[in-house]
Image (cartoon, rainbow, N blue to C red; front, side, top):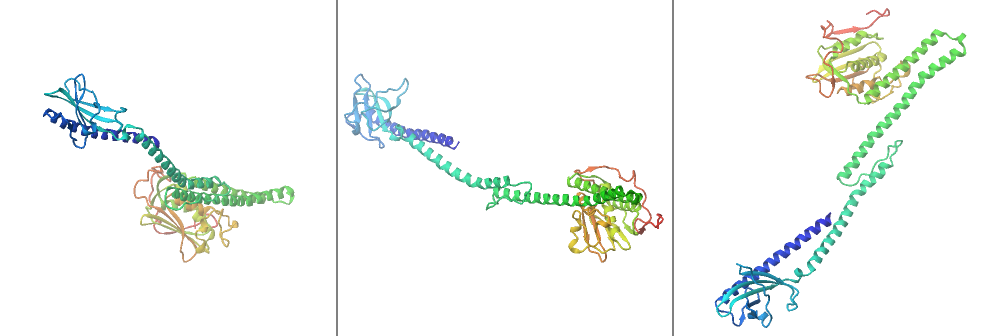
Length: 473
């Protein structure tokens, strides 16, 4: 493509240069011939013709049968007529070009002739000629332009090859590095070239993507390993009980074995259910949102629970959020279950609005969570050694599900400072206007067709709990 463009430009340059030079030479020859014509009409046909404006090839030629030279400049004295061309009808000027005449060894001549009449000789032709440079009449110009084009093509090709090679070399290295990455080992990183060009940014972006892939793969491996371990424990216990019952049925309390087996299957059910919830959260499925009174949701969940210890709730009315009732109810159940499992005497729940956020605090008076473990408790299958173990009945996924659900709803869940025990804080955006259009929306309340009146204890401290008989305390 570069060669084609250069050749086209070269041809245009040669044609334009020829035209300009020829036009200039013809104009000089015409001007000299015109001045000589005026002199001839005034009677100056004898002897030598003077040079006119640097043009020294001038002749006055008779138009008669003999066509002899009547007068000539010093350079043409004794030479035959320059030309015998005559102008057409109604014209007095003729333009010709003489090439290849052995009488003129200077190459080609641009000749301009004017026809005029003189008293002594009748009609005559006055010719003025200017020799062309040899580069116009021969192949020198074409060879020169062709050589320059070829040289430019070679130089441009070499420069392009070098620049393209230097530019694409890092891309080739990145390609080799990416080709060598296996799914079993994502620790390989592509080389980042020096500079801040597009290739360097591409390498940095690929490395960042590989970092995220490695983190996800490591998380999945840990999750699979932990899930396998968590599932193995109740499965092993269940199988052991069944095998013992089959091996010695007369020594086995069948009801106790079935009761223990039911507990193991219940634990398996909770683990599988929590894993399915996490899988849906990891898949990024957008929840179905609806206007939700967070205080009423807390009251509803507390009314359905049979906690181990009393629960004291302080609920501010009218704390509205855009949320999925089932998912947020599961968050509250997980937080309340976690607090009830580790509390000593009581559990407290506070619901209020704070700025642009709805705040739910669940506090217990248990051993608390050390500062160094405040983030670790939200990792999957994490239990603190002292208080959170498999014997306590948890799956190790409750707080993980709660935090991931809070993030999906645009909120956050964290462990805050507390003078005693643990204080987990859930913060969600308050619903000030319509639900964002990017979410799937139901316009009615999930709990009832229409909101009911607030209970008298909605904004005061209330204790929930059940006594040994199952009735309210």
